[in-house]
Length: 325
Image (cartoon, rainbow, N blue to C red; front, side):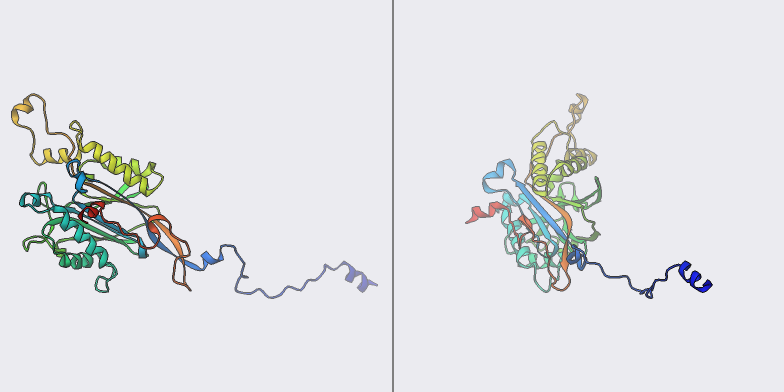
């Protein structure tokens, strides 16, 4: 009887299987993404406003943008001084950009902006010269840059400019330039650098017509308030144009000129006058935002279909090129 009572009062015994060192696999509706790697890509917007006196011909700036394999863009600013020699300054910058686009996937270039500049310059037969910048985003998130002259580039992160390309110049208002002449600069003179980017970073690049007429804080404000890269590029170009024709606006260009010793005659200074105003010029703006997409490892391609500028290969050369035909 005692044994029977003890048996009834004993706690129930359950069979507990040995614990596996590996946790059980769980199904998830996100499993395709979990099995994929993330790649960095650029969403690119562009806008061009020619110099008021050059609007009919489309101006002397040229550019191209391509979102294939991460993303790349380039800007060339034709040097207007060639017009004094009866040479159209736009021809050199446009051909340089066409060649840059054509050689983009060349094996010798190997996704290197300085090599691309070398090949494009060697293939350009037009007479003239241009300042130029080329930027390529690797899928790992590294932005590679090659720049000759005073086309600018800034990277904005969390409301602050965290990186800037500064101009190369022989003296004030005379930048380095890629030229058809043997005495000009070459790809070897380029500023070459790499910057590790994060998702959400915004790249603002442009010809000097942008950065001569607009301050960093204005750029940050417009980028933060714009719904997309296309809208940001347009808003930046339009504000730069507005400032460029404002004779009362104390622009970055006028401030820099005064710091270099350029100013109104001394007798005007006695009257309180000073060198002031915007600088009229061609204005080319590229705004690119970094985002990530999932690329399945077993397929090697993006599972997210890109839209707009990111769909396939989007190449744009300044619309003025159409006037040549």
